[in-house]
Image (cartoon, rainbow over all chains, first blue to last red; front, side, top):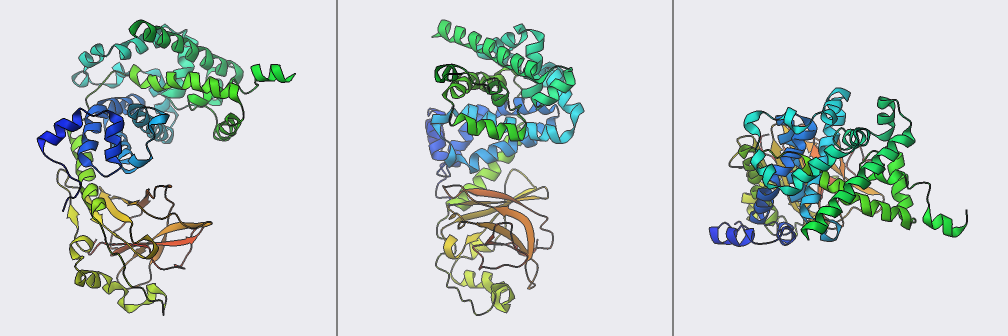
Length: 202
Length: 241
């Protein structure tokens, strides 16, 4: 009966050698094994992002779960020209997490933008070794940390806290134009850093 | 400002960073998105800044996704893969329209008719998903213009979601509406209205199904109807919910 189910170990190993984009072509054809490989690759990142934003394990689980089911159900809409599977997946997670955060009230949103993941994760849940192995991850954290605090603040309030620029302006008692300018300057500096690493790495 | 200056400067350019961070107000966001279609300068700005925002998730320290969460996801996915992959559910069912379909006494017998056509396993059986005691995926059937649609209803912890694939888009000015039917009575309208993508995919949350025997979908005028105005295009038989 399961027409599209490929459950042998061999086929799973073959799937693991495929690029995300090739896997998504199979996901669009209801290939659950291909989806499982996508899940293997990105579940940690999705859960981590949801946890970072929401700060509660149960909420983060729900968001990551619903995001992956949305990915599964809309797999045929994935367009590789619009970005990587990872970016697409984490975009879904981010949108859902911010929606949940906005429903939860200002206090949680402020916490999400104020706290680093260090404060939201229990020690036993940290897998810092993975992060250390991920040079890009640590570099981006470092680059964020090196931004002037007023630029980092507005980026974190917006991205991790889900605040709009007018809310941030009110919160910081700063003109809207200044907030937008800080966002732009901060992102441009991060971009310069990213390009520098790519030049070094590539 | 002369055209050359206009090309090198745009009053909306400052909005690009807030746009890629999702920090514009809703109406501003929509206006800026429209503006992007006609402003190469802002498109270039967004093109430069969006990849930076796409990297921000990497700034988060990694935590391992719970094993139970992965298992729940895979259990649901495998069940839906089997159901959505099954072909020919309810195809070519003959339809009569002498009376409104929801007033016909024999409507509730549709499941039995389907069983006689050899479709019982797909139509009438609740399939419990392994790996999660709270998740069930119930197969549905496409009817009429949607007879080639693949339909499933996922139920988990009191939450239900109707998922369709290969579903035709509703006609212009119309929308799909979900109805809930108890026993032989007239189906009750819900606020679950949905459309589908160009590829025929769609999903909609379905209200509380306690005591509901059938979930139905009809094509209705935009905004929905209080009584069905067309024949169902989707039916999910729940048996005893």
